[in-house]
Image (cartoon, rainbow, N blue to C red; front, side, top):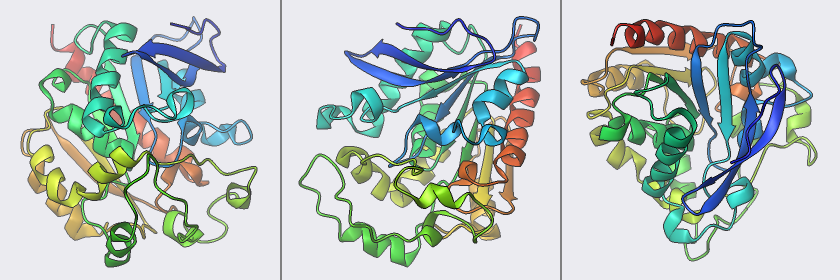
Length: 301
């Protein structure tokens, strides 16, 4: 395992987990800042750890903000991304990814019962984190903050998914999605994110795509088993899935075993919440929720 010893900086790291190498970005708090715990940041589909931190946009970095507030923040490249791109197809599915992330948590923190472990996750990564929260191994997670979760897809998105050929190891890139699908209106994000040099993109492993395509069928059952507290955010300009007040009401009705549930709409953003100018506002809410969860963790003893 390669670990960081440089507080206040974001560094590249790599971990040998489940027979493969998981890459990522790590930020630690300065020694004088009281430690809060580990915040595991899980990116969405077709992205990578840089979703949570871009060097040219430090004001929107979850890693820098979290470290300043006492969290060790690890943004991991999920299995099938980064250093593990090209992973065998049978190890790309969300269940296999959950196994790898639980092993990572155990190696990093001794398990969520030993050190507070909070998970912030986006879109496909949020589906993964909810599965972890529904697993018996995830009952001691401090909490989950999820955004962009496709509880219900739009008809256009369903049609797009149905047309994807599924024989390969990765989802073919068709270029069919427009910026409107994942971003808010012009002015709400840095236009450089749409350029070849500025895009935070990666191929989507086919096995996870097949899992995620079925999420409207599978998520209700998953949510009914989630036990950690959940912070569920939707984007004001969400266009890749349904995200109105009725969806948030459905979420609250499904998360019947969760410690508590907080839902809200983040203004000024599209689907990729953390790639907008309002990312800092969103991350502050995530970290405030994590801080509230710490009160419950402290009371366990």
